[in-house]
Length: 269
Ligand SMILES: Nc1ncnc2c1ncn2[C@@H]1O[C@H](COP(=O)(O)OP(=O)(O)O)[C@@H](O)[C@H]1O
Ligand SMILES: [Mg+2]
Image (cartoon, rainbow, N blue to C red; front, side, top):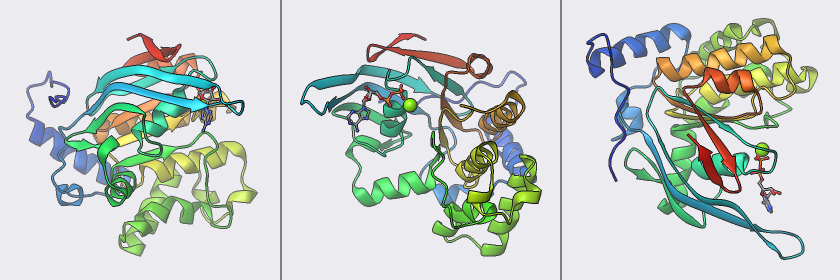
């Protein structure tokens, strides 16, 4: 399987100088500044390759629903991709397979040299905790923790220094206009605030791959715009692969590419 190359620079800079610049930029923006050692053999030039992905579910009556019927695409670091399609088209299913949350029936998912579909449970856990940031459709924040504790949570799992983690969390919340909500419990916050916290949590470990499932659904355009900008800026600065399932045409237009799912296949690219 060939590697996906990182986007070409048109200003003549080398990959390593751009990576160094972006690390500094990430550090300035408060993203936990992980070193290459944190990724083992993984490098910033590795992309995502999805090959002939298929997934079927059984309905309660036992009928087979072929949700994904042969999905293939590649994404390079720094690229943003919108997944669009009618409700029930399989957008969430695709994100769950790519994120190692569910297993495909057939096909391959590779991030760099790491094959998600054949990974062991511990390898999958490391992949999800270390390389993937997910913004779930219903955010799945921990209700008994504060906003800052929720954002810190992935860094605590990764055993990062507690003080540095809290500072990164406050900076992330501040960028999203939520500095004054850092100590609030999740249950005391509005839907738009919760969704912004979910975005902060997804990006806090500086993941290579970000999967956002309708992150701006039901939000007004100002809050939705903040989330869009954060995700799109993150992709360019990390550089990361950001895949967003969305019904929002404005958001889809801001992405580098739009993949439309229909009848289990990609119909436009
Ligand atoms: N765990 C599951 N069991 C059975 N059917 C499922 C399951 N997950 C998803 N589906 C079905 O797969 C189809 C695609 O769902 P989904 O990926 O959530 O679509 P979208 O996110 O595009 O709205 C739907 O018909 C849904 O009912
Ligand atoms: Mg969905």
